[in-house]
Length: 364
Image (cartoon, rainbow, N blue to C red; front, side):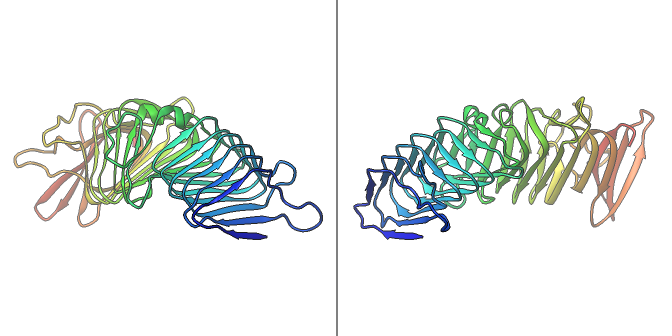
């Protein structure tokens, strides 16, 4: 292993950088940039790949030729990180943190994970994973930075990703968006270009708007410390897709908001609110305005809107079409009433307080 500490002027590699061949373990190179730039004009690992390359404390980092490593590549930089040619990692991690912008060409990951924290991300080629359990995490620059997909409105300083960028992310078992501390705004049409096993979204508040068919093989998980709000239809394609939405605040969903049924399976939806309500937005939404959720198994953990005085139910409660239901709400009794139309109304009673949890049509 080798470690090089640089001055503020940085370091420029004009020739190829290779590991040593032979019986010894592959080499790892650590570069402490001291706030300067790091540039590689020739190939890294063209003849003998390094085991690992770490760059710490850099401003700009640029690779003008192909890079091939056996293990991990970790870059901590505050400026631009740019790859003009292909990057190949046989196994391990690609980690880029703190960069104002990251520009990647073709990237091939053998087995491992990719973590990118940046103010901007552009892909000139595909970012492809070939391992059985590869993971990708994308987040904005700095703790609590917003992340925005597609045409959704973006606050200043947000990491914005478009549909073309998402389409270049291929082969990942799990894709995670957001650091759990900032706003995440998702456009369904852009998100539909992402093909992955599981999508995990973590934010302080999460919004999903627009229309789109999401191509996920296994699950979509939205977790917010505050509210989760869905507007428009989001249809998840894939056999047995499981949708899990957990909000620390309220979970708001417009009619037509979520459907997991398809030819390959009915899927499932779990909605949970720890400190707010699960409901349609607004205060007086007609109960027959449309189905909010269409799924095989529907699970609810949380409370619905108050029933107005003189009425039998709250119009802004969710309408669900499901084959089976599992409903629980703490602090009171859950009541079920089935009407002549076969719809089941689930309500929550605590003392004199009555809330409508959900109205369900289907076998359940």
